[in-house]
Length: 294
Image (tube, rainbow, N blue to C red):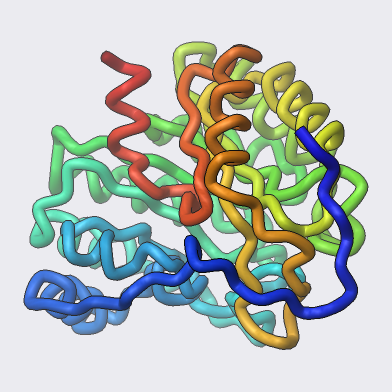
């Protein structure tokens, strides 16, 4: 695998990343339900390229604790700004909409709330429990922030018994100061390790964006670190610049390279890997979970 060349100019988006943006009754119905209950989804807030596919198939990843973040990661379209106190009724609303949508697999994520003592772990736990109460047979995946390394916050989420614990590494260690200046590579690995050690049977999951200027040997080293920490499910996707104020794309990775990385990651020891230009953390999450449980 070749090294990733670094560019200082905007590069044209290749044909394989150009998609039609369809709509339809199912898409509009899901969008309406989410808006009616004043809920956010990462599909909308992060400008996910898969939103039309997911909404049309009655799936969504709920974004809890508001639409503003206390951090300013340079790849993310969720804005930094003044945050409001968490809404205590949000878990019940998410559970109600999840039931109305007929969901059997629910993904919950959040903005980063460094202003809260537990980083919002209690809201995660309450949301998991509310979904279990409304849909007893549903599986719940928790895509969590790093909680600033707070072990008790992590254990609060784990005690609520999610079916999958997901925390994204996002990029290689060298790029953290530029891409995630308020995060810490080792701290994120430690979170995955603690989750794995707390419950070895719990599927742990993480993901990387490619195209930010990383090199092939750095990707491989990151995958080794993730495996050593206990990560078992991996997602690899193309970084797409949300706006001109965000980091530029250094390279568009061809679909064939994503396939090669999937093959390599499986050979390294990951239980399941989703790898492709449009792959995101929760893309086909239900299918990945079913595969490892089969």
